[in-house]
Image (cartoon, rainbow, N blue to C red; front, side, top):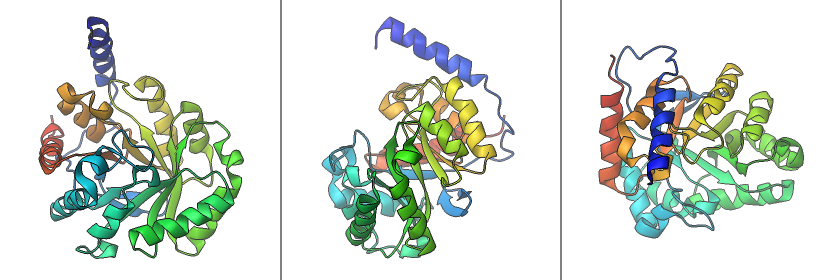
Length: 285
């Protein structure tokens, strides 16, 4: 990191630190707190264990380094500590890890999220059938259309939205939404009657985000006001906030920005470190 980048990051962190906390928690918050997410009130742990660090092309850091067995081991370890929210995607290649992990844990005891890049009714219908087969489950808790950037994402993928709505009615999917990769798409999500859940990039330094943090926060407030569930991603700036982990986690758990968040841990030690830090940094002032 050069001097200019360091100064920009420091200024961003200082500015966002002043963003008001709606109500500082009366007690420490924990990674394994149970949250009811979105209109369907799907139960999730405050932290999800993600599988998509530098993910794409049916691969990710987690799958490259750990394989399906290693990722399943992360989920098993998290489950033992009360973290039962599993974040996967077709593009990460992590469905095989879900199938393996479910051999040890009853399906109804965990919340599974996955993402589809589908833009048509035919593609998302085929994806839902394939995903459930790959995971070894009859239903998926949360399905998101992956990486939406266009302001008109809902109109351009209307057929896919209709299929997901039908899947909800058939109880193949419990709740639906998008993972967001632009502020314009996020603003549309806040007004969408179809959308239940929005996954969005948020951290105090504005790293690996769609816009500066102070631009994103008001849109998140609108999403919340409209009853949408918000899942934070890139809360550690995809590793770029390794020197500011406490500040980033404090922001994620105490600012009124997200309901829960996902972190792509790559080892048990990394998961356990974040698990312990979350309770520590959210202690009442």
